[in-house]
Amino acid sequence: MDRREVLQRLMGTLGAGLAIPALGASHPMRRHLADHAGVAAADAKASVGAKPEFLSAGQLETLRSAAERILPGSTRAKVAPFIDQLLAVDTPENQRRFLSALETLDAGSTTRYHRSWRALDEAQQVELLTALSTADPAAPEEPPAPRDGFEHLKGWIVGAYYSSETGMRELGWTGNVFFASFPGCPHPEGHG
Image 1 (cartoon, rainbow, N blue to C red):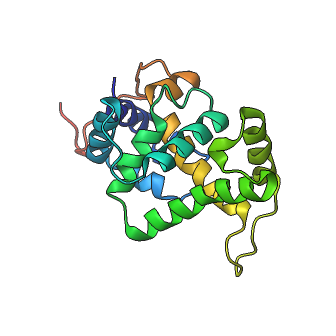
Image 2 (image 1 turned 30 degrees about the horizontal axis):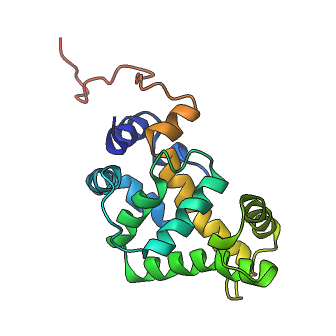
């Protein structure tokens, strides 16, 4: 089952707001997940290992390793290539914001360890992610803080992971769909 089918079934039973509650209402991933055709196209390209369309190879590897640290199993769910495909068709503003969020990892890594994110071992990556996730967010009138970049990046990762069959099954989804009540006829007089 591909992402589009998973999302169509999930959205049909739960609604977009309940499907992935960790995503803020204004996060760009919400719009992507509501576009079933776009999800299908991105998933198809990500599933066959298409070359990155938006991210560089190094950025894709940074995203892949960060996703795996944040949500183990993300590599199997093809989170990084899926996000890359979505970003390729996103707005320039959302693309810039994503790259800035991804850069938060290298900036934090350089400050803390004097090396890039990809040069860190797994324990150091986890330590850095923990520090970013527990730092103070910026006040509304201030420029984004490292925590804000981390949260934005995490939103993309969470949305991509939990829209995959792997992520949905982790949440207990079995693929069975049911209606709480049978949809009735919309005519007020009914059918006799």
